[in-house]
Length: 75
Image (cartoon, rainbow, N blue to C red; front, top):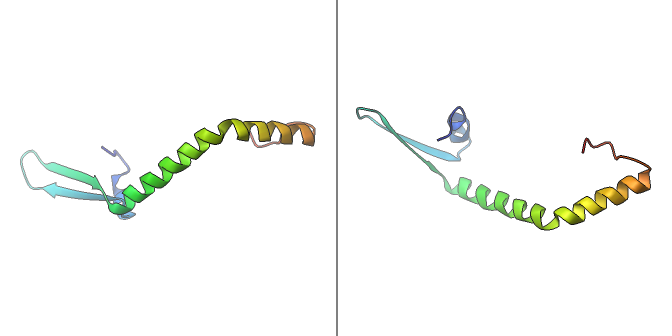
């Protein structure tokens, strides 16, 4: 489910992992309430970025024109 990252996000309190002593071993993972809150926040941010993408692009172009070239931000 989260190869290579599950320990980190479990340490951060975003993932609860339950290991069952069965054959074959069974591991259940689920997000915590904090993970749910983070997801909602990031989903909101992504929605904001999508809604304002064209305005940000226009603002960048206007800035570049006013500065006489590329703004140097690597875009």
